[in-house]
Image (cartoon, rainbow, N blue to C red; front, side, top):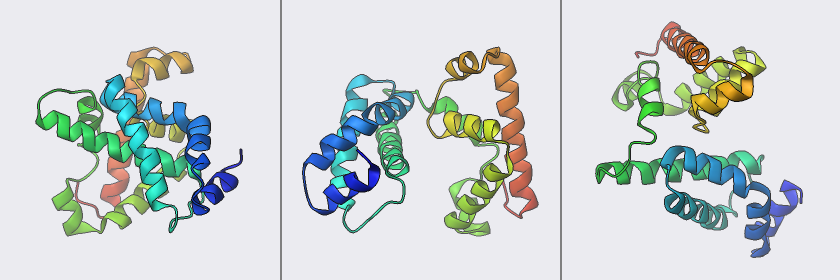
Length: 185
């Protein structure tokens, strides 16, 4: 079913919208949640909560891209769950992803001093669009979807060490770009 039709089902308060969302984007949502949480039970709960959040926010929201909308929701819910579980010292699954980016993205208190969060996200978007399609997809798959280096390297036919170096160069490029735009990293 087309995204516009699924969104219309949400607006009509038709519960079939949830089933259609699950059919079309369930595996996508599970992959994002699993990459962050590394726990099937927590993953399933976040995906289920994602559908509930879609139900609660449409209307008034009418997303342009349903895939991006549900992806952002499941990612945010998964990160929140990860932080909650981390506080309970149960997981370290997303620790590597977050630590890899900490050197090129400012801390929240620095962001507030240098620019609004929206401005920072616009700068990152501009930087992403300046990359080639493959580099942009690689960065998004690694740092947004949380795909593992091993899986990405295998898909790209690269050695994991070579991919790690490429990701490092991308992070360094992001850092340099943000600094050139006046963002204190």
